[in-house]
Length: 121
Image (cartoon, rainbow, N blue to C red):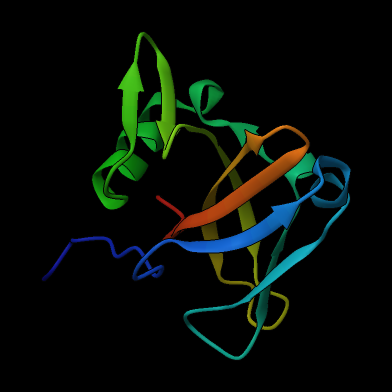
């Protein structure tokens, strides 16, 4: 049996490029990898990567390439990483959604979707 967990984001995707407040209030939706349902998340319901459970942190680091750590801070492309658990609206499959959010120019923020990983049991 193959126990390797898959990251359903083949390559990171830009999901936002604009003013900070526009992303904070934005509800993001992506197709569920297992069915026709939708996964939804916002920055407001996410947790800063540094503060998630150590087991989940290790699990995500193993599944998502290019997460960097420096003095206890985790980042991807020099932006902070956030994680939220999302359940699809159709069959209730659970996934951890990992994304970045950071300022790249004054008043310009960019967010990358870097991981959709099955919730670790």
